[in-house]
Image (cartoon, rainbow, N blue to C red; front, top):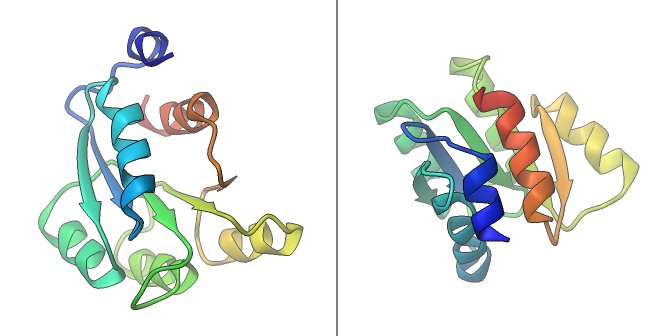
Length: 130
């Protein structure tokens, strides 16, 4: 499947910020995204994510809702104070309709439930990186 993703998506020169504290999830996303040529930056908490955003020009954010220092909804609101345009894709185990509404209200562009399907994730990212 990774070869198919590599053939379908070329994000060379794009920076993807993954805000996720779980190592196995980070490995999963890294495995998927490295086949596309994208540069991957990992932040394990909100503070680290804000630092990366301040010093790097990221093209998209993959944001987990449950972080050790701040929830993803609050982090999305904080990001939107200084950057209204960067796409934010939430991925979470919370799958209720109101969770999606909460994410959109916080300024997120897309919402994926975990476990995240690699093809779905790539098609969502591609929509914003084209």
